[in-house]
Length: 307
Ligand code: 7PJ
Image 1 (cartoon, protein in one colour):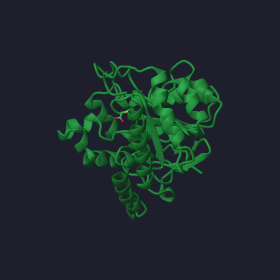
Image 2: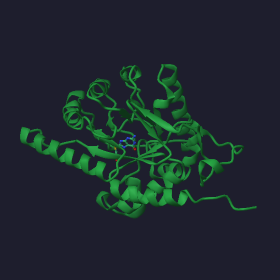
Image 3: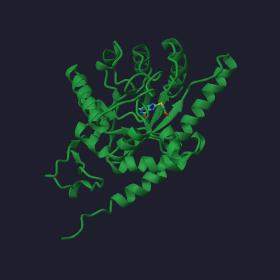
Image 4: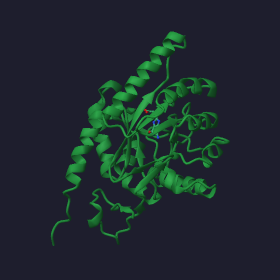
């Protein structure tokens, strides 16, 4: 059975979705290793950054403990997925070695083994992908869309979920001059083509979610255009994941620094969910869970106007 999305700003519950309106059939589940996440609810991916400043043993221990506490708190707050990231992909960030990235991520991943939610690793490094999958990660979230040599091979013969994200350029330079004729059309066709390529390589579509990559080689205007027209990404035919939490585009709109972007992040998350996003990647899990609970409760009561 497939969930259908209307090709417009509103979406209705399954049973009332019109069929002949160009809507795309979307998967009802996302296969992530031994998990199958049902997408009849909006899923929250909680961000766990492990990009420490200190490399002393004491620093590492403190860092590891803090990371674990934060992960547990996010799970208690209603996170459906924890996404561990050890590479800073902020605009202008310099790349780090795979070894350092592994040293940051793997201890946290090991300590989270047996968690009741799937663990995702945010990486583009094939060596870390392989190690993470051996350590029990259920999802690989690759902001480069599995384009590195050997990245596709690292995930192909496993059952892990894949987040296939669009990025124009590389973090070091991506914000210098992002350019598109039609950002939605280009991101959408790139994601569709990339999923086709991954499927042709033998990766089941059940495992793929797609992400337009807010802030990754996009101007503020491109980000606003993407967020305002996200429903067009339903044509890709894969579950849509959106990460806009605390991003600079929200700072540009509100004039607020990162730590004061909660309200803006909630607003953006709801816009994304209304447009069909099924997974939201956020820093503030509890607040996002509440905002989405309101949306879901109202969604269940939506009806087309009587004739
Ligand atoms: C994203 C990500 C995103 C996915 C980051 C930040 C920057 N992965 N990793 N989507 N952003 N899939 O969180 O501000 O938007 S790192």
